[in-house]
Image (cartoon, rainbow, N blue to C red; front, top):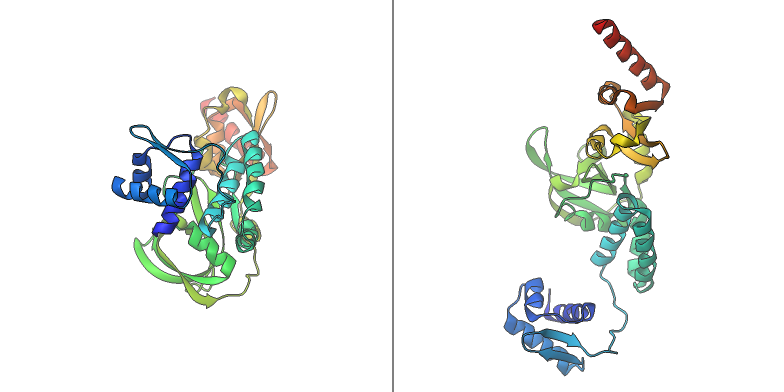
Length: 315
């Protein structure tokens, strides 16, 4: 960060709180206290009415306001990504408040940033995972990916493949990213494999946008995810859980393709997307009469068969 950007950021920080200590500023920008004093002095010379009190900190005189802030592309992308997560991973009231705040944020964006957000809005998808948030530092690659989606630029990545335990370089055409089970995934057309591939973002060790431009893909992110589920024989399973056990399965359900939930008076209806039927039926059987499969009929019949086998074994 150059000095001009840092001084502007310091001014915004000073407006965010009643009093800001010099050490807070130094820690945020990893600079010395002497540099903080110089930067604050520069703001004062520029006419910003800063009040400094030894042992207390800095504050800005009441009534002073910074003109409309211009967000960077990185910041605007972070806001949009956060909106997608908050919409699915928090309560309705919080999500509605954040959406209202986003309208205000978008109102002060420059036309280039607004255009970019429109380009990438459909390139981010979050599956409902109410008890799972991204770990710290998990999304360091996201901006470059979304920037490539917006600019239609081929992305060069160095990717670690878990199966082989090796890394290799690939050129990919990003379609979008989605969040599931606490991780971000990239959907992209891989030049190496000549097909669409699913990459875990945290396994992308290096990334760089190239000058190569690609055409808009025939598949959108949502279309790819829908096709992916169909090709892998994914089945939607609807289960009613007794409310008395719901709080005990918040983490467990994530391992069985949990998608969404609807809280009712006597039970909570949950939806799962699964590929291996026996996997979820064995889990559901452990809840006995506290879990009831509503659909599809194939899973209901499988549950009946398993119960019958157990009955024959123990009678």
